Length: 307
Ligand code: SF4
Image (cartoon, rainbow, N blue to C red; front, side, top):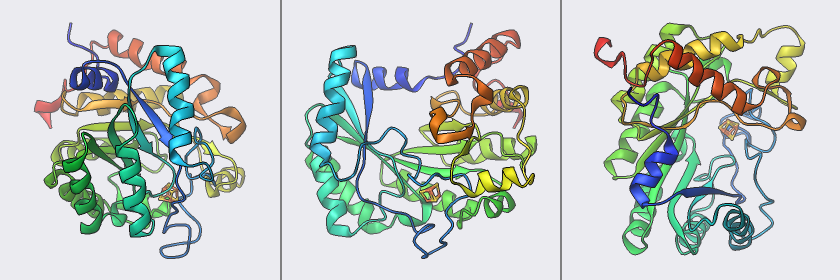
């Protein structure tokens, strides 16, 4: 039987010859969608910590953050190789000298094989590309840039208050891939304003821009967000778990089988959310997705010829 889907852990193991672990690093970056450059409200689903639920404080220098996390991973898994992961907010939305400083520091951390930099499509310019190209040339690290596509529907992007378009993501993706960097796109598979046709359009974009990996998120309601307020006012109805599973399978069947899957369901702690993963652990939801795929004889890329 074909594999169900291409797990990112397998992709990393194949590339680096052993298991590789992502270490979230928090720097004092921010977001144009929160500081008034684009908006003051932020995306409706984004928590005040900018989705960095697993992060340490940005007051701690990145060497100490990395050291603390890598020690835990060594103890637990005998880990030796890591990806320095700049996760919270928009990590290219920072002064240029600080960006150079953090990227150089991270590239020299012991055991660091790659830098993963999460940002918005409108926050990547030639300066960031040139800086990262220099770093890649000077240090033995790969570069992966993560962009939030979230949906291929511009109307839904407006409801989410993203303040960028689908076209912005396509253009930035092209710049990233042309520079020879890896590209990871984020998708929210159960946006209530999207239909199944939008999931198919998501997959067309993912395939077209040749994303190396994707993260699929389930919509959760984080505390202190606009989405929480909308939900409490009765303006949002969430999709059921069955519908989520159905959409994730539809998405997987329609993307290239060489795209690695970093995540198939959101991971957020109960204390940070009002509603999350249908009252189940993310592991349980993942098992349910995999069981349903087996039942349907489904696998990643199954329908790609039909697109
Ligand atoms: S999700 Fe990203 S782009 Fe949106 S408000 Fe949060 S940090 Fe900014």
